[in-house]
Length: 249
Image (cartoon, rainbow, N blue to C red; front, top):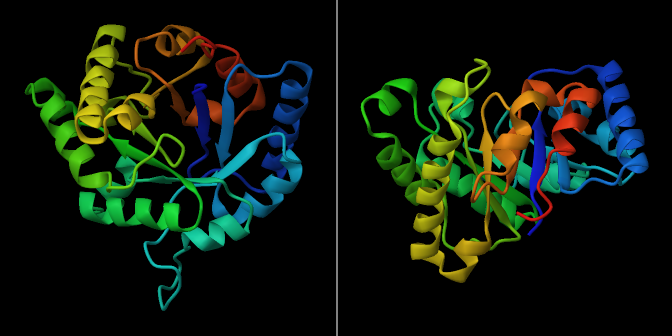
């Protein structure tokens, strides 16, 4: 499968930010991307972002509730995201795990909800700095993967995103060797559980991806794309990362 370059806008973006979607659309029209491209704006912009993209860029949500509907004030169901024009949703991001206490089991239920609504789930795993320094990174991410990925995964309905917590928004990134080691570990875990499907599932890297390091990261073995944070907010930076995608991955 082609690499996937996904932008997570997090809690950024008012109406004037739609100009960045329009600029990215123009950029990609003039230079067709070597990868699949997805932007996950805040829910308040989703419908307008879909309209601004005009079908040239896929749009996604940043989270969803596990239930289809109900008395869950402030929550958004996967079906609502689908209805608003989304084709994917991020679940289990470390910020959701850290600040909202999300467990692996809850993340798995959200992934199932995404599939139920016809969305691709981007399921996130990643270790903290202390866990990395203590030598437990592979164990932690393996456990998160086992608990957060439900049965029913296919290469089309899921991507796994490895995001070392200590690299998110810090400007720090793991070495290519560290990324390759973790992606190989995730790949082996997926193949053991899902066979050939696990071999074809895209594994994204996320954590301070920027134009200056994207080419190196996207050429690491078993890196099936990137989940980009702050650098996805500006069309010029995000477009430069997209241009680094490896068409032979």
